[in-house]
Image (cartoon, one colour):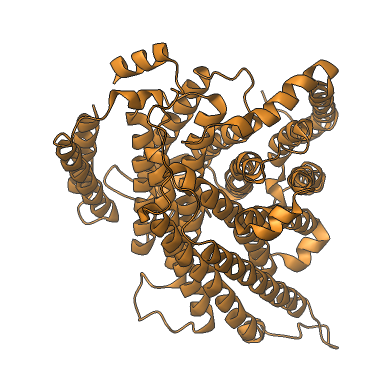
Length: 53
Length: 541
């Protein structure tokens, strides 16, 4: 099965754009989901309680 | 088990030495055999030392980290020395002593691999073990694997560097080692990945801290890149030479897909992992925005994959692939600056600490250089800009603003933070010497980068200058002659940087040896690892 150049370009120009945008949206929603805030704040400050030796 | 592995290494190396008679691979075979038998001797020797305390399994396992840090410092001294040597070689090209090994072409990969893999790699492996255990609150699952990784990785670096001097090269930039070294590294790297996953599985923290995400991306993507770019058929088992499975423009595209992602995942993602742990720890402030760090993580991992083709502007590569690389390079500025900004905003409100503490200042300058060099990178990736900059010293300057200004500075900052912790000291032996190192490194980097901006832009302009008759105004050699003052300046800047690394190692050794700085350890510390875990660990060993 071979694809010609035009098909590949059309595919990457459409699908490529949408999956990237979709993924971006998912990441932003995950990062800014209100109930995740607490988890992230904890994670950021927890490392400072580490014992070093 | 360790003895068995050392024996295998010894015999394997000996076998390679015998079948590779008369070829550089034979020399490498005997080198591997020597290392194998040396390890065997050391392991047997260690049987005579007293039994370690059974309590050790309730603590973190930091010996491989300690070894990795010392090795990283040794590599950076060797590799920046070689770098400065070849910088002077460009000023005085006849200074090769009429020998093959001392030619520019053979010494340059010793410098590049030495700093990237020898220094950068050891620093990444060492700090990743440390960060992984602390942020997971779990001990590494066994004692053998981390040592196999550290020793195996350094053996790979040694094979690579000695091979270059003998003329062994695949001629792929930053992937010069030949097939046998590549296979060996693949085994070591898979063990590294498995060790990371096994430790994460034992973690006591529900959330995996973002630094680990970056380290994981670094390990996984480097494995993929290394395997695909290394696909090659050796001439025979007893021959160092191999031929790539790819040819022509596809070979070039695979090489630069590898090449730029090595910059992305080795020299960026891994060191961002370092930044996201050691910067908050040193400043004693949580990262400015944890959410932003997540967004920039996914931005960096997904966007970097596509930018490699900007190394091949105006070549036989299809125009749309070049445009694709260029577009992604520009978009990439967003997550890059998000990380740099996140680091600097974390320091906002702690500028007094930055002023007083050279270690924290190393990290701040690293974040600034990270911001500067990612901006420069996006700019240079624009096709018409690249028409001026490509093949000139501007690229060399750009790489060094990233490598010296960002990668090395964040590493020195992290190492100066880590050394007193690991060896149980109050602080580094001399804050003054850190200060000297800082200013030498910063001055050296700035001199280097400015020299290369000047020489690069002059080269680019001279090469494209036409005279009244419509022919080229300058011959190539005239542009070479015009570079001489900048090459002297560059070599001087490089020397400053090299001097700083020597002072750094001296300071670290003095810290380790000093008895005055010893922290009084409380006799019975709380176990970090749960006792049930400790028990399984002990039986496993």
